[in-house]
Figure 1 (cartoon, rainbow, N blue to C red):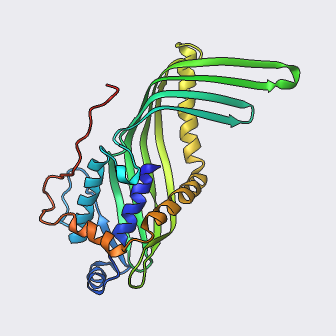
Figure 2 (cartoon, one colour):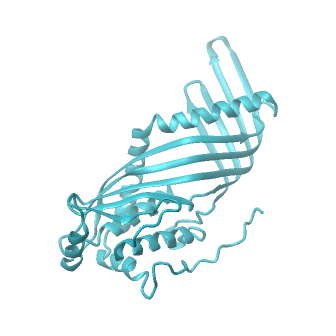
Figure 3 (cartoon, one colour):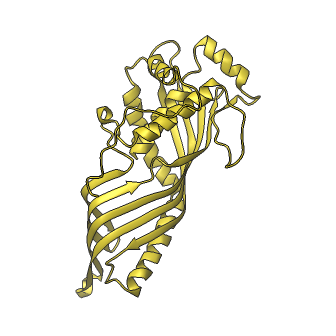
Length: 297
């Protein structure tokens, strides 16, 4: 979710360079007949493409800098290290129907949030809309230890219940997680803050690889439960895309608009445009980030 906050800020900022007359005129010249401009276009492997206009390579370098900065986070914004994201310990309470679980996870690590391919990052200057499509090939989730105490009480009226405990380590990978969608924005007429008016996303998942030990032992039953868990997670994400989109919009849009409010928007635009001053498109990406050693290694 924190990654999506950063992404929403980025697409809002990149979309904003359209109002000043000089920039607007330049973009109108570059747009196709539908008003579309590719801000970021990654070629297929082994295929060369002609360099895009200046905003394109600046946006591309800015995104690469964000990827590298994820190794240190943005402490001033309250965003921790995201590559990898580490959570020392957390509890998860889950209640649905006859299932009640209390799960404790220790030393959770999520790697791969900074390793994504941008299939589409397009601005339409007529509709004030940004279309994006990001693909995460492998989000690798591990935990040093987890424990769960699950109560299945379907026959409560008869006083019958089944209880089991699980404990072990956790390996859980999301394969080809795709985040695509559209962001609509509104810009001030002259000065002031930009505002995101909507953020619609479609999140889909190709597959899951689960190796969580300790479900009723470590044998064939444990492997069967992992297999079922893989299917459930894929189905849960792919069959609930509208609900997930609504949750993301309700969570992220107010936060990003709050971050943009009261700030001179053109100062933010200038931050992107000046971030590559003195640089060429193919120069090495350098950021002020010195990643710390893994404290759990």
